[in-house]
Length: 160
Image (cartoon, rainbow, N blue to C red; front, side, top):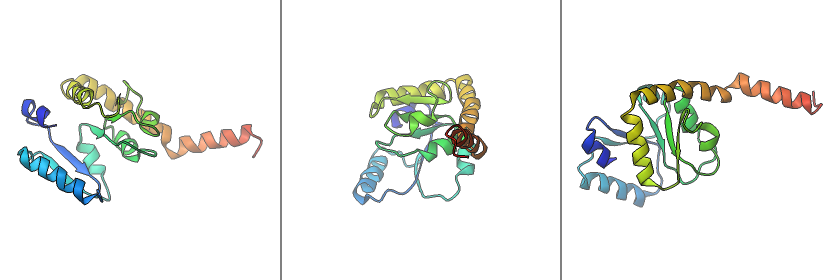
Protein backbone atom coordinates (compact mmCIF):
# COMPACT_ATOMS: atom_id res chain seq x y z
CA UNK A 1 0.00 0.00 0.00
CA UNK A 2 2.78 2.42 0.87
CA UNK A 3 4.51 1.80 -2.47
CA UNK A 4 1.25 2.32 -4.34
CA UNK A 5 0.48 5.51 -2.42
CA UNK A 6 3.85 7.00 -3.38
CA UNK A 7 3.04 6.59 -7.07
CA UNK A 8 -0.73 7.22 -6.70
CA UNK A 9 -1.19 9.69 -3.82
CA UNK A 10 -4.99 9.57 -4.10
CA UNK A 11 -5.00 5.98 -2.78
CA UNK A 12 -6.16 5.51 0.80
CA UNK A 13 -6.72 2.38 2.84
CA UNK A 14 -9.51 2.04 5.39
CA UNK A 15 -9.36 -1.07 7.55
CA UNK A 16 -12.64 -2.08 9.20
CA UNK A 17 -13.22 -4.62 11.94
CA UNK A 18 -11.82 -5.34 15.36
CA UNK A 19 -8.64 -7.27 15.89
CA UNK A 20 -8.49 -8.73 19.39
CA UNK A 21 -4.74 -9.40 19.12
CA UNK A 22 -3.33 -6.37 20.96
CA UNK A 23 0.28 -7.18 20.02
CA UNK A 24 -0.65 -7.28 16.31
CA UNK A 25 -2.62 -4.03 16.64
CA UNK A 26 0.42 -2.33 18.18
CA UNK A 27 2.73 -3.74 15.50
CA UNK A 28 0.47 -2.46 12.71
CA UNK A 29 -0.06 1.02 14.17
CA UNK A 30 3.70 1.31 14.76
CA UNK A 31 4.38 0.23 11.16
CA UNK A 32 1.96 2.85 9.85
CA UNK A 33 3.49 5.56 12.05
CA UNK A 34 7.09 4.63 11.14
CA UNK A 35 6.21 4.90 7.46
CA UNK A 36 4.41 8.24 7.91
CA UNK A 37 1.28 6.63 6.48
CA UNK A 38 -1.30 7.67 9.11
CA UNK A 39 -2.82 10.21 6.72
CA UNK A 40 -3.89 7.48 4.26
CA UNK A 41 -4.02 4.23 6.22
CA UNK A 42 -6.90 4.35 8.68
CA UNK A 43 -7.96 1.81 11.29
CA UNK A 44 -11.72 2.36 11.44
CA UNK A 45 -12.73 -0.36 13.90
CA UNK A 46 -16.12 -2.02 13.88
CA UNK A 47 -18.99 -0.39 12.00
CA UNK A 48 -22.58 -1.60 12.18
CA UNK A 49 -23.56 -0.39 8.71
CA UNK A 50 -21.00 -0.25 5.91
CA UNK A 51 -23.37 0.76 3.11
CA UNK A 52 -21.82 4.22 2.71
CA UNK A 53 -18.31 2.77 2.89
CA UNK A 54 -19.02 0.22 0.14
CA UNK A 55 -20.84 2.80 -1.98
CA UNK A 56 -17.80 5.08 -1.99
CA UNK A 57 -15.05 2.43 -2.10
CA UNK A 58 -13.27 1.68 -5.35
CA UNK A 59 -12.10 -1.75 -4.28
CA UNK A 60 -12.54 -4.33 -1.51
CA UNK A 61 -9.31 -6.15 -0.62
CA UNK A 62 -9.44 -9.29 1.53
CA UNK A 63 -6.13 -10.66 2.74
CA UNK A 64 -7.40 -13.16 5.30
CA UNK A 65 -5.55 -16.40 5.81
CA UNK A 66 -8.78 -18.15 6.82
CA UNK A 67 -12.43 -17.44 6.14
CA UNK A 68 -15.69 -19.26 6.44
CA UNK A 69 -17.99 -17.54 4.00
CA UNK A 70 -16.53 -14.08 3.44
CA UNK A 71 -19.58 -11.87 3.99
CA UNK A 72 -17.44 -8.74 3.49
CA UNK A 73 -16.85 -9.80 -0.11
CA UNK A 74 -20.52 -10.49 -0.72
CA UNK A 75 -21.55 -7.19 0.87
CA UNK A 76 -19.01 -5.31 -1.25
CA UNK A 77 -20.23 -6.97 -4.44
CA UNK A 78 -23.86 -6.23 -3.56
CA UNK A 79 -22.81 -2.56 -3.64
CA UNK A 80 -20.99 -2.93 -6.97
CA UNK A 81 -17.59 -2.80 -5.33
CA UNK A 82 -15.10 -5.08 -7.10
CA UNK A 83 -13.03 -7.32 -4.88
CA UNK A 84 -9.49 -8.66 -4.78
CA UNK A 85 -8.82 -11.51 -2.39
CA UNK A 86 -6.28 -14.12 -1.56
CA UNK A 87 -7.50 -17.41 -3.02
CA UNK A 88 -7.91 -19.20 0.29
CA UNK A 89 -10.09 -22.16 1.19
CA UNK A 90 -13.78 -21.58 1.74
CA UNK A 91 -15.36 -18.42 0.56
CA UNK A 92 -13.57 -16.05 -1.79
CA UNK A 93 -13.62 -18.35 -4.83
CA UNK A 94 -17.30 -19.04 -4.17
CA UNK A 95 -18.12 -15.33 -4.23
CA UNK A 96 -15.64 -13.71 -6.64
CA UNK A 97 -15.90 -14.77 -10.26
CA UNK A 98 -12.18 -14.46 -11.02
CA UNK A 99 -11.54 -12.08 -13.88
CA UNK A 100 -15.23 -11.17 -14.06
CA UNK A 101 -16.36 -9.55 -10.79
CA UNK A 102 -12.93 -9.30 -9.17
CA UNK A 103 -9.61 -11.06 -8.87
CA UNK A 104 -8.28 -13.95 -6.83
CA UNK A 105 -4.55 -13.95 -6.14
CA UNK A 106 -2.35 -16.65 -4.59
CA UNK A 107 -2.37 -16.62 -0.79
CA UNK A 108 0.33 -14.43 0.78
CA UNK A 109 1.69 -13.36 -2.61
CA UNK A 110 2.06 -9.67 -1.82
CA UNK A 111 3.79 -8.95 -5.13
CA UNK A 112 0.87 -10.28 -7.20
CA UNK A 113 -1.59 -8.59 -4.82
CA UNK A 114 0.09 -5.21 -5.34
CA UNK A 115 0.32 -5.73 -9.12
CA UNK A 116 -3.37 -6.67 -9.25
CA UNK A 117 -4.48 -3.64 -7.23
CA UNK A 118 -2.32 -1.37 -9.38
CA UNK A 119 -3.68 -2.88 -12.60
CA UNK A 120 -7.25 -2.35 -11.46
CA UNK A 121 -6.79 1.17 -10.13
CA UNK A 122 -5.08 2.26 -13.34
CA UNK A 123 -7.70 0.72 -15.61
CA UNK A 124 -11.04 2.48 -15.04
CA UNK A 125 -12.75 0.52 -17.83
CA UNK A 126 -11.90 -2.78 -16.17
CA UNK A 127 -13.03 -1.43 -12.78
CA UNK A 128 -16.35 -0.39 -14.34
CA UNK A 129 -16.75 -3.83 -15.92
CA UNK A 130 -15.94 -5.60 -12.62
CA UNK A 131 -18.35 -3.30 -10.77
CA UNK A 132 -21.24 -4.13 -13.12
CA UNK A 133 -20.46 -7.83 -12.84
CA UNK A 134 -20.15 -7.59 -9.04
CA UNK A 135 -23.80 -6.51 -8.82
CA UNK A 136 -24.83 -9.49 -10.94
CA UNK A 137 -22.57 -11.90 -9.10
CA UNK A 138 -24.02 -10.92 -5.73
CA UNK A 139 -27.52 -11.76 -6.95
CA UNK A 140 -26.58 -15.46 -6.86
CA UNK A 141 -26.81 -15.17 -3.06
CA UNK A 142 -29.95 -13.05 -2.67
CA UNK A 143 -32.92 -14.50 -0.83
CA UNK A 144 -35.22 -15.08 -3.80
CA UNK A 145 -32.51 -16.88 -5.77
CA UNK A 146 -31.52 -19.12 -2.85
CA UNK A 147 -35.17 -19.79 -1.99
CA UNK A 148 -35.80 -21.01 -5.55
CA UNK A 149 -32.69 -23.20 -5.47
CA UNK A 150 -33.76 -24.79 -2.18
CA UNK A 151 -37.30 -25.32 -3.43
CA UNK A 152 -36.00 -27.02 -6.59
CA UNK A 153 -33.68 -29.22 -4.53
CA UNK A 154 -36.49 -30.26 -2.18
CA UNK A 155 -38.78 -30.94 -5.13
CA UNK A 156 -36.12 -33.04 -6.94
CA UNK A 157 -35.53 -35.06 -3.77
CA UNK A 158 -39.25 -35.63 -3.32
CA UNK A 159 -39.30 -33.80 0.00
CA UNK A 160 -42.12 -31.42 -0.88
